[in-house]
Figure 1 (cartoon, rainbow, N blue to C red):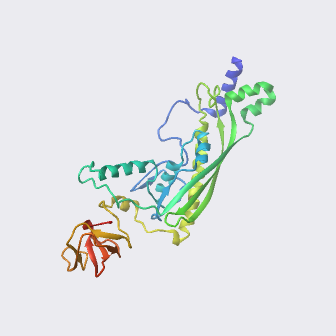
Figure 2: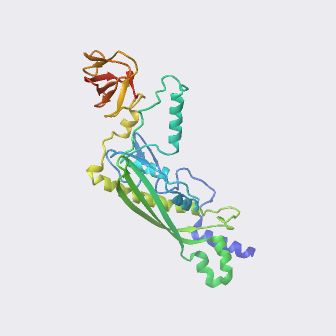
Figure 3: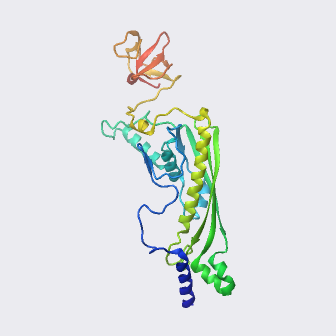
Length: 338
């Protein structure tokens, strides 16, 4: 038996499974087709991705449904959202907004600020987040078909002993992944784009002493990593098709600045008032002004609690409102929702 195991390992290694010590790690090497980095000054290492001159809107990537996550976990793979968000930012076709686990911490910071616990000047509060224009929902289905492998090719020579070799040397497997991405308009809820992606790969999977089923250790197989590479390639193919769809329809493109512009904006925290909202003065004797400026002519004096309707966008810290008798501008910090 010892001779048979040694021979199997020798066949696997001499067949090209190892080019070097399997425990030797090289930083920046390996990985999937999706790798590199992205920031406000651009991206690197994004081979194969579609690119845009400017973003076509802000997008939130949501977690796949539970059954998808269960399937992925069966291969030791986690949620693909981080991978997809990297692709999106590298492509510069959309601005990615945080709606994942980081969102919980963002809201926690706002709760601390609202409770008076944040340091003065922290400027954390309402009215600062970029709204998502699109919601992207990913899904994945992938299969692993046994193509005979080393054990199959040696079966005719070794008969029943081929099963032992199969446990030792694994097999040559054909891997395929199919993914889908659905994009919905965040305001209307209408699905505006969808695409399917796919990828396939033939890969030699070497398992020593039953790795993957409670064995002693690994000698270069990384079956889960191989599956992950196929899924990543499929999502890349998938995302490029989504970009093509949105690029080809001007009605789907939203007006947003570049990532550097959006990230660099200095926005003061505060309430956001939309057209049609009802607001009231916080105190009495608040001036309703003819123009959005502190030295503008006063057209009326408002009493505390008097109802006003917002009729236009904010400008220079003033809100355009309609009162019971007059229209004009009121300083934002002096009004509130009733």
